[in-house]
Length: 157
Length: 157
DNA sequence: TCTCAATTTAGAATGATTCTAAAATAATGG
DNA sequence: CCATTATTTTAGAATCATTCTAAATTGAGA
Image (cartoon, rainbow over all chains, first blue to last red; front, side):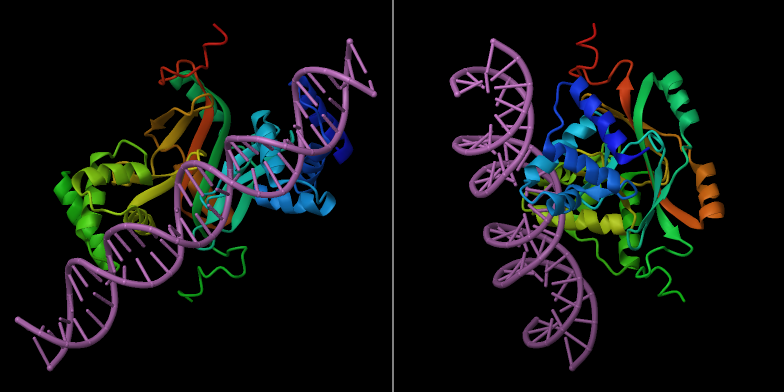
């Protein structure tokens, strides 16, 4: 599915809830679509948007990301480094990724399976809890960390 | 296992890594032990410690919690409300709790099972990733939310 | 065009966390 | 016991992400 079509869909979601797709919002969404693989912080988004639209204010980026998170168009997440990160939730990977975080250097790898459907059913049955979203992160060490600068194996070599 | 014995054990962990159990650190650890069930923020810990030892500084609380997290005596976690929270990791519930977070009001419930052992074995085999810790939070709605002020069901009644 | 509501802007304010420099404390060696 | 040195703590300043504020801008409809 191409970017234009995605933007159209997001526009509809916004309209449905009584919001407009302003120029600023559209550019922010476009940046998110063009960087679907990353986990951008608000600051990251701000920088990328500024390249296309230098007049944008940081507050607008924050407000827009917050709005998109509320409408569940993006997922807001936290990896413990004090910065919120945002991810588009296309139907492809909606509700479907977990993270491996390197304990030494913080490198992040994403896993595209959803391993939790069964657990979520159990939660609903046993705990009366209806899951909207989840967050599953593993902290540990890669046998070979994707970050070249990671010192995990330097000391013990 | 009683508090005194736990403190003794933590003292040994500190010593092993070349740190001392100072008065301040001991009181912080004691507060954590006495509130094992909660997820205290640094500010919470600070308040509780101040009751017993009013001279303590906030920076010391932060530094000590950071240190304890590094030594894996406490787990540092994030529920997306902008505050880091800290939990003692006694062997009873080490590596073994997940969270249910109310989407409406943020109320938190803890689940004491560990549902992920199997997945962690799979990660090591398939991804070459050795898990040290994990974080599993579900965001959603309780059929009946433990927080009386939660408005989940107010609107739709 | 005029009006109203929604949105954006710059910059100030907030709140959590970290840093800094000086003081206190503890451990070591003479 | 005293001097030396390393560790830790303290108060308060600094930083960084995020949110708020008040004024300006925009756009849709009358």
